[in-house]
Image (cartoon, rainbow, N blue to C red):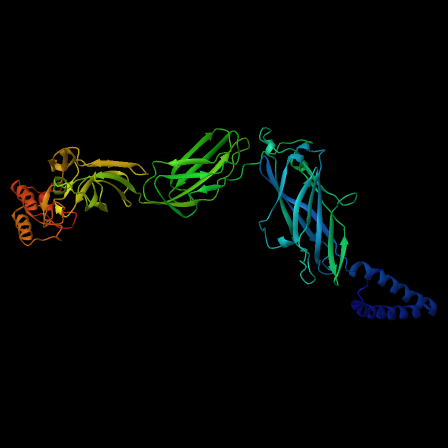
Amino acid sequence: MLNINWYIIKPVELLIHGIAGTLKLFAYSIQVKMIYKEKLKYLFFIILFLFNCDLFAANPKFDLRLTNRNYISSNEGYFDIVIKHTNPGQSDFLYAGAEYVIILNTDFQTEHLNYIYAIDTATYGTERIPLNYIGGLSKNSDTLKLIQGDSILTGNEPVISSTSGTLVARIRFYNPDLYSNSCLLEEQFSWKTVPPGVFTKVYFRNNGETNLINNSFSTFSTYDLCVGSFCCLEAPLHPPVRISPENNSTHSAPVTLQWQKGFPVNYSAHLQIAEDSAFSNILFDSSFTLPDGNENVSVTLALLITPGDYYWRVKQGGIPPQGAYNEPWKFSIMPGSITLNLTVIPEGLYRFNQFDFEYKAYLRNADAPFELVDSFNVSSSDSLFENTLIFRNALPGRYYIVVSTPGCVETWSKEGGEYIEGGGVLNEYDFTLDDSQAFYENLILVRNKYCIYSGDVNQDQNIDLFDVLSVYYNSNNFKTTDSHTDLTGDNITDLSDILIAENNSKKFVISRSPVPTNQNLVSSGHQLLKSP
């Protein structure tokens, strides 16, 4: 039965009456009989009836397309399923669900049977059927089937666009067997619209009733991209997927860049690193090739160690043409950490077989004015007096290692400093091996080890009478808590401590460093005023 929208017939009927009146006057003017006037009016009414059935019937028309195809590599591509309302003057197209069936035409490309297809769930634009209304995608031989998702309740129907169309789904496809062939061959997709078996069905809803409609389908082929029935689509490779360093991340040097390979044979890539996102000041610009395989690509920037902000991008190649760069990613290099295994022994402790003590180690630039770069507090209980220190604010370079501990003179490492590496390297320095390990050979041999001098009680970098008197005074008072005068580490100040301080004061022991005497800045912040 024809479906007539009576709510608009009344004004049209009034229009017809007006036309009939005009015809009546015309009929009188030519003296037509009344019966012909009545028949003419009835004829116009029938014409109106038929016209109303075509224009105002709630039966939306649509165009269902496979469109927007794109090839992002020689073995990978995608296309969109888009539905468009083509008679919007009638009413809205209320989408009630659908089943989509696509045939892979093997007359063009038998390798399509090896392709893997998947729905891309990303959102493209604003006109899209909600994802929950689109079901799963399956492939059986040469047939793709996209089933209906959740049931669409009355009142929740998506309205199909009559301008740009509404996206149903983006379908990605790739063929892992095409690496050796190096190109994507001719192909064609078409709709299956009639039985037997499954076929494409689109439903709309009108006045709460769900109806099936089938009226316009389009297909596509790569034939228009190629000459003849065979072609090789050498689509450029898309930018690689980067793994590390992530955008806006912070790392210590050296930094390792890593990204997915994307194409396993004849792989090549081009990497750039710059100081700015526009890549106007490029620091690293290099092309390289890699062996076949699917392993991720890793590049370690061994020479990029200066703290600061950097930007990186990469493009990849292979059998297809070279691809485009991905967008710049920023990474920051923070001041690196230095690991130092340090051995140092206070004289008094070693003489009396004690090994628990605390000290502070400093790194100073090896060149004047010997700025302080970093420090580390050590609480040592190792019987070998060996401890691992981590300097988190120093870059690899040449440094003086300076040791300061209560009761001993501050001691610097050998002249010229020591080159210390970063990047997880365990550096070693041992003051106890030889007196040449200290600046100006400022060590004392105790049994088989070279030790730093004990006796600088007031920490003025000089062992003199003032230190001896302090030790003597505390020994007479049986002082047990003053670690400065307890030079032997036995928790009491006694004659043993007095003898150590007195012997070193007679040798005029002072701190030795490359800093001129009148500028000799002690690491604790004091200034040495005495002459060597």
